[in-house]
Amino acid sequence: MAIKTVLRMGDPILLMKAAPVEQFDTPELHDLIQNLEDTMLHMNGAGIAAPQIGESVRVVIFGQKDSDERINPRYPDADVVPYTVLINPTLTPVGSEIEKDWEGCLSVPGMRGIVPRHTRLHYKGFDQYGNRIDRLVSGFHARVVQHECDHLDGILYPMRIPDLKDFGYTDVFFPNQDIQDD
Figure 1 (tube, rainbow, N blue to C red):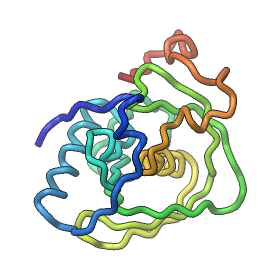
Figure 2 (cartoon, rainbow, N blue to C red; figure 1 turned 180 degrees about the horizontal axis):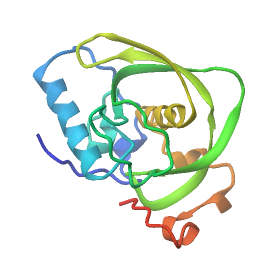
Figure 3 (cartoon, rainbow, N blue to C red; figure 1 turned 60 degrees about the horizontal axis):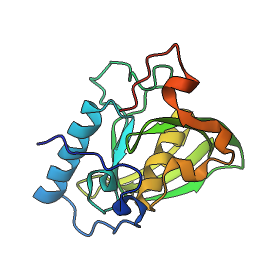
Figure 4 (tube, helix red, strand yellow; figure 1 turned 90 degrees about the vertical axis):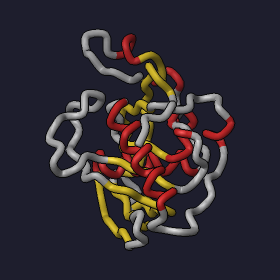
């Protein structure tokens, strides 16, 4: 459909709690998902949430399609996460183990920060057709889901950084790496 402009930190839409999706398998929902996919692929994102393109509804997509074997240039060392459309998600941490790691965001271009996240996660929701999704995940997959679902509650990753010394420009933290954040 179309590559959309990604809203940047400071836009009030990114701070709102998104509304639940009421109807599945509609042309409007399919168009939104296609726009999210086109935008995420264009920007080499690991995921994207509907509020990031100005649609305040509880829809995220993340991961790579099975046929897409390319490595994400923004996260070259990350495990491959299966392509997922996740609507009206609920997240439940599994255990108390927390891991701190670097994150970036399409809505916070050119910056990275160290964010604590649960290492294991149980998430539920629906796909665009209304089929249930129920998964237990860990590692990078769990991190991506938590990051994207935060967008649905008006939370950007810098709000989760406990020490702002661990937040700054990507090219300063990683001067010899070609990590593209915008």
